[in-house]
Amino acid sequence: MKNFMIIPKGFAGLPMEEGFLSPAENKKNFIVAVENWYYGPEEPSNDPKANPEFYAALADAMQCDEKDARRKHCSNCGYYDNSLMAQVKIERIPMAGYDTGYGFRGHCEKLNFICNDMRVCQAWEDRKDEMD
Image (cartoon, rainbow, N blue to C red; front, top):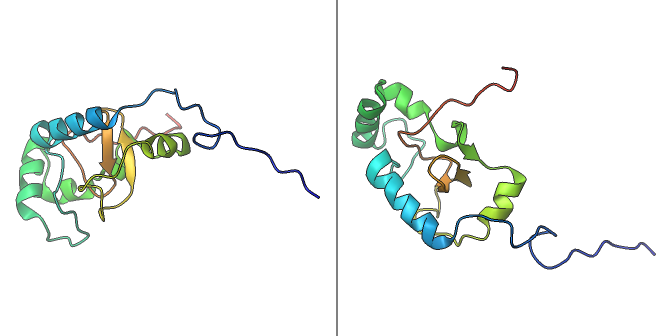
């Protein structure tokens, strides 16, 4: 008979006391991202013609053309963390209405909130190449 490892209560043996943002902090920081950093669009889509007003405003704010603004997503931003440890921590934050149906959740390390990979904001930065 095989002996199985017993995993203590918590998140796969990770300590519960490891710091992360609270649901209240997440909500507050989400509102800041929407109001001050053009976080959106409200209803993301893979349709290249969807949300024209949002992407026109974002392109203006980011000083790029709309086509470049549409290429940027949380999932290809340098601040997007969807590592295993981040996912474990994110599970502590209940799903909100803006999470449902709009891609996977990740942690925005710049604005400190749970973002969605199909959205973007003005704080977007290209990922640094690990070879640099």
